[in-house]
Structures are given as structure tokens and as C-alpha cells.
Length: 248
Image 1 (cartoon, rainbow, N blue to C red):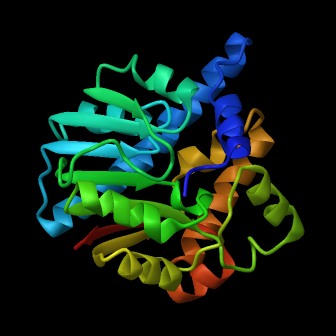
Image 2 (image 1 turned 90 degrees about the vertical axis):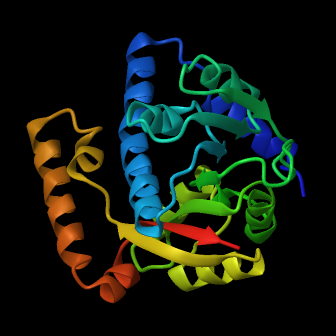
């Protein structure tokens, strides 16, 4: 199933370069901060599985920030991005970290079977109508997949304000860890390593522009870390990022 014209139009708008220089700097800064944790997860999970990929594909690569972060760490040798947004592709192609960037229809990747050593698909599956089908397509082009999604099947994300925000940014699913494992199984994959991350202080305070807001962000970070000290309880209460390395 290809992505709807409405969703494609939304992504084009998201990746349109803001006219305001301050907004451009804020956007690029947020992408870099977000990329750090995603790259951390890829490196950690591959390390745990003893995987050292040479060729990496990033499905839903956005502006290429994650691949740029991995390149800065010397992780991988060739990096190919795939995106449904022409605007994002144009930005990602400027990155020296990317060997190539291609447009795809949201369903079928323009790549050969097992062309890559690893596929990274971070914060994409919650946006697509059939996550298992897209995950299976990722497994077609690589023997290993690192996926990352927010786990939103919890009390915090069930609040009306949070549900409205998730819909606004295009989330079609509210995953639990068990649901992600089931989706991976339906895609013909087995999770061999995984982690949950409530995210770091830099993420929680990035948009804070006053001392009070920075303190509030730091307080939220501390509470979230404490809650996740007991993961089964934490998952029921708050949204965390879940990353997993899956193989056929």
C-alpha cells in the first residue's frame, strides 16, 4: 500500500525549509539532537548482536541526520536513504554522509533483494497503515533491521491532549512492546536485541528558553528516569522510545 497523497503533502510541508533563519536553526538543531539518541541505539544494538554493517539503508531518512551522526562515528561505509518526501530527499542529498538518496512510494523500496547489510527504520512504522508489510519490505533488502518506535500504549499518551498531538503529527498506531514484537514476527523477523529509552536531558530541555522551563524539563527527565527503573511499570505510565534489532 502506497502512502496517501494527503500524508505525502504533510511530509512535504514538514520538510520545507523555513524562511525564518531562527526557525531553520531550531529545526536543524532538533534534528541533530534527535539523531544522537537514534544513532546511539543503532550502534548499541548492533554491538550486542555482533553486527558490523558495511552498507546501511535508512528508510524514512528525513534530512539524513541519523546517517550523518553514524558517519561521524565511523559506523558503516556506504549509506543510502529512502524517503517519500521530495523536500526531505533534496535536503538529505546535501549531506556528505549519504552515498545516495532515493524517493520511494512508502511501500516498495527501489533496491535489490539483500542489497544492504542493515536497514534502519526509526519513527516511521507508527505513521504507516501496514507496519508489518513495510517491515517485511525492509527485510527483503537487508538481513537485519533496526527499528525504532514510540511506545504510546500507556496512561500518559491516552490523555486527550496527547492523542490530539499524535494525530496531528501523523501517528496511526499506539504501540506496546508486545505489539511491536508481533509485527516483527508477521514480517518474518525475530527480535534479537532491544532497549527502551526515556531519552536524555538534552531532549527534555531543548525547547526550553527560560530557566524555569529548563528546570521543569530537567525535573521531567528525572521523574521519567525514575519511573523506568521498573520497566513494566514505566511502560504503563509514560511514552518511551523502543528500539530493536531484528533478523530473519
